[in-house]
Image 1 (cartoon, rainbow, N blue to C red):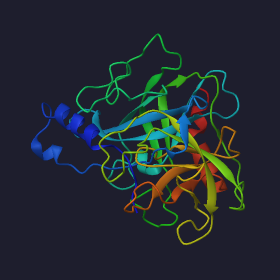
Image 2: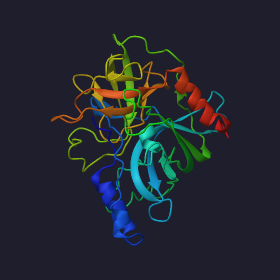
Image 3: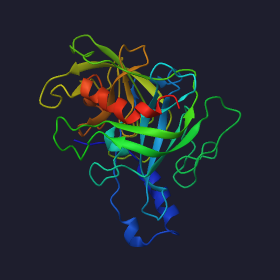
Image 4: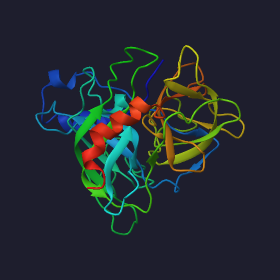
Length: 314
């Protein structure tokens, strides 16, 4: 089992950045490796402007900018989004700082579709600042980049309690982002059968030709694909997660870099029923079943509302 995330080039970029700031001992810290990305029959995703690329940071350098990992997340609202939204739903292993169920000290989130495509592993993306700076490009619509210093973890702790590994996180942005549309959290009990159910996945991770076993290149752009629900209640899911079919034929799947990304159902809606969580490693990486943690459980919905409730539409 693997949770998928930041590529070697991103970690090397931040390592070089930290050399002037911290000792070799601090540089040897363990990095969390989250996430998953879109493979197979995918297209560029311009349909979900509220899905963004998130970088998370620790304070290992004596600041709050020591890169941990990257993920995908969705800006959501409670139905009255006139003033924008600050609430982002992602995976718990994304907000996790790698020490248990604690959280990272800060994050940055970019909403541009090609948010990190120009990062070369040495130099940050000159148009967006990814992975460690917010730069706005006034020539591009929906080029928001926002910092966060508040986030929550539903209790993810390195898959403790699996299959109920509690892989949900919430990020509260420092300032609201106004978009033409937002994601919405599902109601309870939506997923009842795996038969003939089509869903849509979206994320910023690695795609075809860049296997998770050698994650040296990633597009870091928002891609989307249609997939099929295949399991809701076996030893790996037990009603807490869903399993969807990986790439093949007309389907798309997920791979390293997509963790926390939304699973939409109905497939043409903005309703998020689960967040990308993990996959099983195999010789043909990113070609097996994909697993996402369910949001359509009342206790998960209640927790999201609890930690985000005072921040809706601020």
